[in-house]
Length: 283
Length: 283
Image (cartoon, rainbow over all chains, first blue to last red; front, side, top):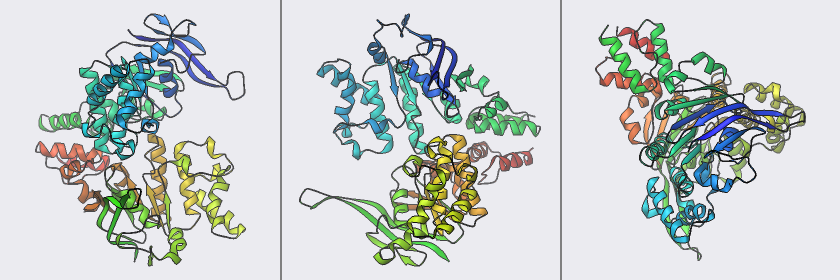
């Protein structure tokens, strides 16, 4: 079932001098099965946006629909919604608190009412899906590397078997290979388990490489909502929003200015190299 | 003159059981030799857990060598009578800006360090001013740190270290928690310190593009220095860096992929400008 945001506004500290319009008339449809990237400068409303998707924040005006029901309705079961829409916060490893990894991953599913057995099966399944090494299931979270902790934290949310998985900067602070491993893992969840992924990221390169749809937030509004190639063709506008285009796209543009016949829509270094090669060989 | 010299530095974490008997020994640093000359900009790269931060903590006597020596500006860090001299010679900036700021007002925070060292009041104020100017934060001197962005906070942390007049500043992943524009601000401030103020800089990072302008780079893996050279020398070894869980700057990767296809580009292209210039030569 899709998630629908219909003219959602969020005003913090309304009716005071500190009033901030964090979301300003945002309308979006998020169908099941997509891999979506959300980008935006700090303070653009990204985090506020994703917290509306599982009802952690309710809109000041407008509505959020899940399964054809308005989640702001009094009789709507928001606890039920959170089973379907899982949210992994920034630095989720700070929220690991149990004595060992497996117990920690079991916490979420138990909390939403699964039996002990069900929860354990769900935890095993989630840890396997995130590629967590099986010899560390009973390790203390303090013995894990940064990337392993991050996986364990994602598994904790995944064990609740959500249909939508929202990740707020899942690669922050990881080394380059750790970043690719987490993004590959998320991509795999999307591909094989069919989970809808909403990835909040600061890295234009990551977004360009992995997602099929980019939502650009600026001052609480949706500035762009399109395929990466289309969104990243607006380099000047993105720059004004404090964002940029992926580095390979920048290089392609400079070469075009210098008179080479390079594709202006390249997004990754592989695509850029292919296009530059063609431009040099077949003139 | 070497401001920092680590000679065959070994550091072991020893885990003990309840009776104090050692149960497990982890060698975090394994015969590390790193020397930094006055006025140099040195980058230290390595994946999570490679020993970078453990090394940094030896430079201002937070950790002491198990074997070997660390000499900072002629002082052995194990010499207890010089601990405070070592710490005021080698200033540290850490990852999380929120953990490093204590003052209610920016200038107060920057003045805390020199005040703690017993610097006379009049001089504290002149140091606060010059330090804030050096990182481009003078206009924020009367602001509350809570109101600043991540990049601005991190520049205040750097100013706080500068105000203690260290001979050398060590930054341990100072941009890991910042957004792209915050990263740019901080990297620009760090480069300015080295170029303009002639400050010795040791920058530990995961971001390859931040050390492109360094004088030398050390790459660490499993507690050892495994590569050492100029950025050009280091980044021409794309495959080796990948095997060390690292990456290369974006333009370097495109150049490397073009070379694999047979385009005669020179080794070690580091910036966008260099790449565009070299590709134009190939036409």
